[in-house]
Length: 239
Ligand code: ADP
Ligand code: MG
Image (cartoon, rainbow, N blue to C red; front, side):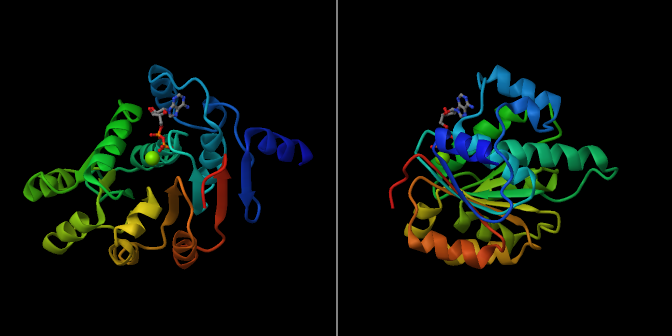
């Protein structure tokens, strides 16, 4: 225990919450699909970054998280890796192919969504893991068509996703991971109610919220979205 505490302090990781899983030191030590570990190698991810060391095992224990860590610290992969692991596990156990999405990532801008989806494609290559991008600027019909054909992850902006969900019936029964990326920015842009609306159409998903900064509003929101939350902060995110 004191070893783990020393390790976290060395990595500049602070955690708050009950029974926080121990950090991992390498990608191959936490039961990820072999292909995913390969994809990480190909992408040049030799070692997890500090935020990934703590977020991946916490996420893989299905815990809800509020994470703050500097820009560029690798937060995207910290939620994509557990999402890809979850999706490929579920899909390889299923016999029916056409089920709805298994995870949703919301981000405040089209550009951010594109970046997240791009990284998801790279890391999920060769696995039963397909993505749909739900952002403005591309035809809605095309996005609906893609979802209808069977995908695992939706990456989108809150406004556009609500728009799509109102026009088309998407089965959200199996969405068990809900990520709010750049949550401070989502709140600043007034997406709170829309994010809450999407959350309420899900059945008790694991919630993971990420930000470079951490303000009271995000903190408050996290308490209304999840019980038994783990707070993780890496480095010295500004308050
Ligand atoms: P954040 O969301 O925290 O601002 P990103 O997730 O966008 O940061 O990651 C920043 C950069 O670091 C990206 O180019 C990403 O590909 C790279 N990266 C992420 N994890 C690792 C890793 N474990 N090893 C090497 N590079 C990584
Ligand atoms: Mg990011």
